[in-house]
Image 1 (tube, rainbow, N blue to C red):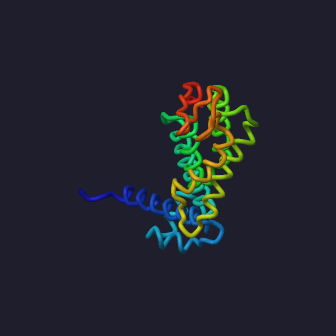
Image 2 (cartoon, rainbow, N blue to C red):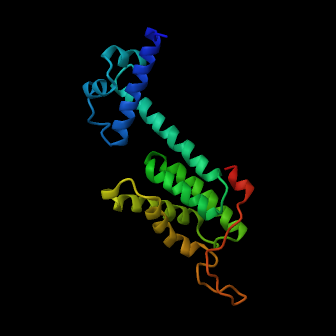
Image 3 (cartoon, rainbow, N blue to C red):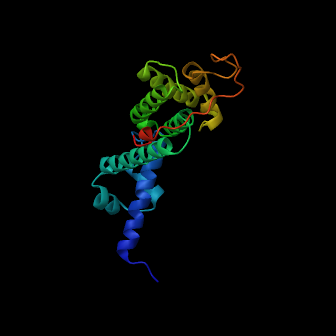
Length: 197
């Protein structure tokens, strides 16, 4: 069945939005020209002006789309089953690839750290400071691995492990009050109330 003009125009608008999203993700939002966007999307100027009004309208729509995508990924990462530590690692990995949602990631990590403190999984710490340290460690791991961008989950997890060492009640090899050495990190039960952040 042959596509109608409206369908072709919607596809063109979607390609144009994708081209703008790609430019923003590459950090070229300020410098990308209308001509480059139109060429990448294989559309004409009227498609841009009809659907987005202007270059700035297109870039705003692309920015909103990227932010919404990042926030959705953050909430999924926080809601999946697992220990507080595992959930925080997932949130930090998402934040490392979606830097637009850093402030939302910090808020989610704060809630997870608070849940870990309340459950006894983490030491009683400055929750906001711990959240900033965790998200900052993930961001730093991403910045360091510019040559291998995007960072691998292992690089981010290794940076987070240093922060977790100070948060966890019994880091690997530590002695709890009963005197038995712990060979692995403790497994933490997730708190249902935190999953509903």
